[in-house]
Length: 173
Image 1 (cartoon, rainbow, N blue to C red):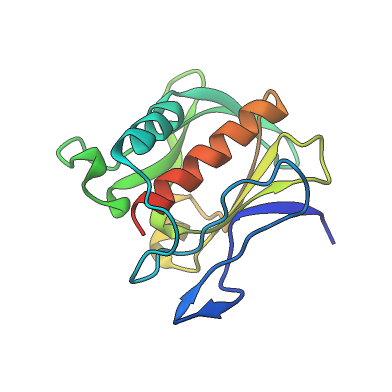
Image 2: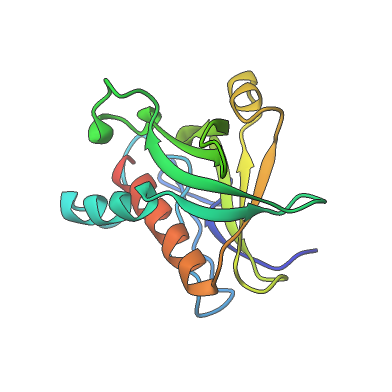
């Protein structure tokens, strides 16, 4: 089985009706959060932390989707609609990938439709894997994908992106 460091995970244990998991695979593991529960556990993410995290993932960056034939795309986290306030709702944010040459959309997934996100430690430590919820909406918006393996230029960039995504998710718990 592949080795990985989880950032978002399916429910693994429960305390007072809330589920959580903390990965201790290696020194690179970051804050691990689940699907947002009804009530928050642990420290609250501040507006300033959210702003820093969102500004990082909002910048379009060229990353490679690790399909059989790897292909670069421009990735960013954006609001699904320009009319929606960015920080108003977790459901208003999406991870999107666009064609490098035309900047036209090649697919997206709402952040709330990402059930798992983990660093694949069996690779060169620069691959982030997203597993999507089983829903018609996620399948349609991602153009038939149930998961997405994305390769970054470096392990540091991958870690920073994953940590920023975890902060955004934690903010909306």
